[in-house]
Image: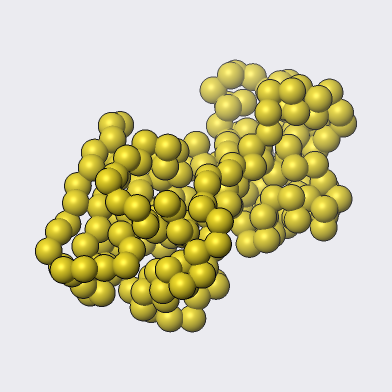
Length: 239
């Protein structure tokens, strides 16, 4: 039974493991570069009420297979990936008030004392039908794509699109974007779009989605979830 699952954005799996060692908690690590590996640290605690599992990236959660009844997941991944899932944000640095290892201890106690329903992964990612339906509707990302398609050569187009998504995701400033776009007449229309109020609204919505979730942010800024998910996922894949 999975008692709880917590996202970690500011620590690596190794650092989470060190935090658990400080708490004298035996635990298991699941992840790896390009392949799944399982590594277990035993002997830190003779008897413990919960078994912590450190997972490298959200996409590796379905690969977890360990012989323990009461487990708690600690998933290390980018903020954008964690924001699209139902992993708790209790351990995020802008949420917690304690040092990481103490906050992890509190999270395990909370999960043990208030288990509720068994946790299951849910990812707020549009289906193919939703992508197709949204792609047929007017949207900022469609306007962006239409302007980008006019840019040649292809290598320049892809690089400028990548920078546009980075701006919308909060990865670079508008000043940095202007410096990259100015001086090239091919990018004038794209720069005008990126300097618009609509671009700023989408950027602010993406920032909010990392805190309150995609659905709530989309409602607050009157945008489609499709656009927020697209920016978050694209930036995560290219950053």
